[in-house]
Length: 218
Ligand SMILES: [Zn+2]
Image 1 (tube, protein in one colour):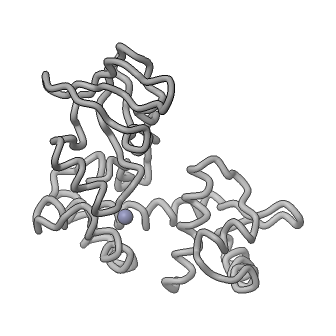
Image 2 (cartoon, helix red, strand yellow):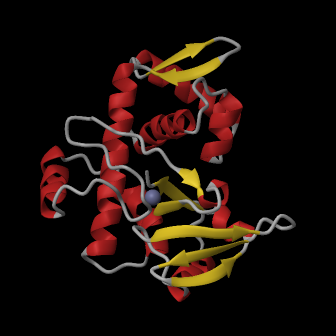
Image 3 (cartoon, protein in one colour):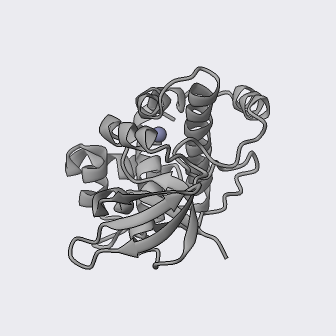
């Protein structure tokens, strides 16, 4: 498989994760930053290989074989990101672009060794689930902090923004993956909120709350 074929498979996978079960050529093209005509050519190739199913006037979705392939790519991507952040001390915002290249290295042995070396992590530094060696993958149930009702407590499991400015903000207020956050109050007017993290309370904007993913504690 070429890198471009793998990237198309991955794009279709991510779209389905976001709820677009059958992706139109335009949606895939937009996601890949490319022209619809080149996506059409690629879909023909992938469909010949049995990796995607294309329904005329409806769109494209992955076959079981295609999904398995996508999960392998995602697994590599997320393990490399974890490796760079945890072991090489890269910043969260630096690793995605590099992982985009590393995810195309084809050695099952290498990736399984890397997984073992990292202690079989369940999530990557962005809070996304890492598919296991056998391809099993538990999608995380997460909501945005902005949706969490007053008085409720959740754990930060993911970030909706990967800009340096956002990471700086999080560092400043010591918000990280795994932080337990309680919603104290909300402003009706601008949806900003008071939250508390390990006993300290402060005010955050709606934009910040919107970009923090939370796993509700029951
Ligand atoms: Zn990434």
